[in-house]
Length: 140
Image (cartoon, rainbow, N blue to C red; front, side, top):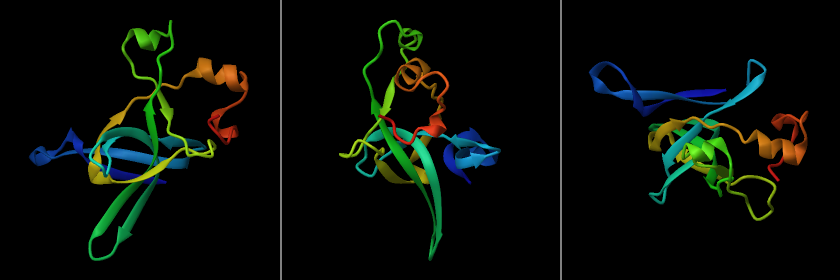
């Protein structure tokens, strides 16, 4: 499990803002993978789901996030989230269309945590009502 404070969220003493980013495959029996908005290495603002938090210690401590990169998807007509101007996301996939693209991002580049609601209507249409996301290895 990885839990680290990222800059610029809840105010603390001295006006410094911090937030907790969580990336755990097993947190009390279920996964807890936060969605984040971050500045990529090319300077573009992106969103993705944190998968792993990497801490390295050399001459200088390093904190990195392995993020499954996501991009905006076409809205669905009649969806209540579309009416509230919510953004629909989908994972950016590799050429093999099996696994999402991973990006390594310094924790200091995380701008905010996102609240993401899963598209259960689409999920049930593709996988059935009784299939849970943890049991399906791909996002096809």
